[in-house]
Length: 171
Length: 171
DNA sequence: CAACCTCCGTACGGTGCCGTATGGAACTGA
DNA sequence: TCAGTTCCATACGGCACCGTACGGAGGTTG
Image (cartoon, rainbow over all chains, first blue to last red):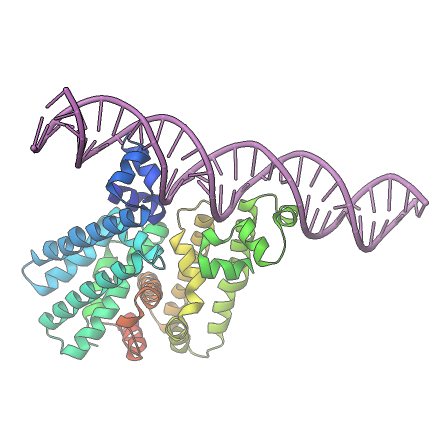
């Protein structure tokens, strides 16, 4: 529920009174479960970190080949922009003291996973790391673009191919 | 001044009372110059659009070759992350009704410029457009990453080369 | 049954912001 | 000089949120 609010209204929407009202309850109840708003937000963020970061990686791990995993990963952004809503909300609130550490952990975890992936494709460690950083930049940028200006992408299914080609090519 | 607040505190910081206080004035004064907060925000955003979007393009146009222009463009993000602060604030507030139209215009303008650039490099129109969308994604993503998790990039000067190679290679 | 703990509601004060009302000082022009 | 305009301050009410105080219903345990 708090996650839904986070996706829809950003970090600011993870607030005691609005959420209580949404649940048909009152603040009195909410403040029994959480000492304050910060604790509510922290719990929400950590729950997202726990459940959704690994979930994506597990989903991607279902693909048999490393190339297939990369394709799956970037395909996720393009096929369902709404799925990136929480990610974008986190980036939007990157300066919030409750958000920053979670964001940092998730970023490290994901870039680390990408390093593995590029290593499995055959890049040597240093190159794999560079590719991973680049690929994650593309991932973030596409999520932003899909969300903020979908018309520039609009049905551009070949963007996925372009992306994969540019990120994996050994020029 | 309002632009400074926008860069530092995001769209939420472009508020009547905080800005007035920052200027050593009072709201009474502020509400004489602007009918309401929305007008203040709109004026701030449009001023940014007017002065800074074209400014970047003009700066880049100073480079003699198209390749040099691309290099300059991506170099800007990596050499001074603070310069992207307003961009990121805009993206963070993309759902704000005052922000959305400005963001859309700026995105269109920039992607359009990139299409020109890739055309000048020698890509045929359709390919140039695809490259432009991809390149702008990388631009946005790098700005995000530099701002939210600088430690993963950290001194990685070769990222610029990687980026240019991946975006311009004719694989 | 009585004391107790759990969970929720009502009621209140505080803060930061929006927007309005109103008055006044300084300048400007007839 | 005096009326009008410009620019700013004080003061007020409103709203949305945070957080606290406190009371009460219902199950739990001695």
